[in-house]
Image 1 (cartoon, rainbow, N blue to C red):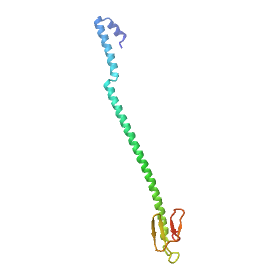
Image 2: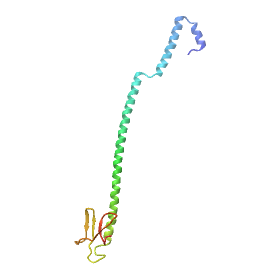
Image 3: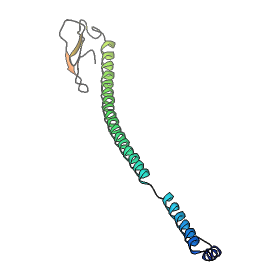
Image 4: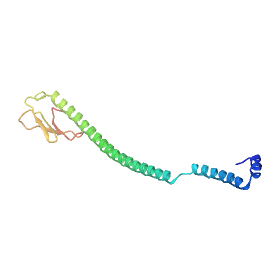
Length: 145
């Protein structure tokens, strides 16, 4: 914008010169507005960047989903391992009790047999005198308890 003094000086100029100066001032205002605006090329570049960011976000979301699925499988596996570990510790306790009372320790010629599910360990050829352990569902002879 022009100051009051400048406007008075311009008004004293010849009409063609005055019009030229006013036109130049208008062109400067337009140039300033244009510099502050976004060009079509810049806008298209911005759209492309937003499109690429959208793809990246989708890829990250899919990767996150796959990670969560793997984490779920890992949690399940850890739980299964904990259960197997617990059963192994119970089996170790049972074996320790069975072998702390070897065959014949209580009665002469007694049989000691240990059966854990499908696995079994027999220390004599005579049939065992079994009793069930209600806690584990396993069968042991009376001397192994």
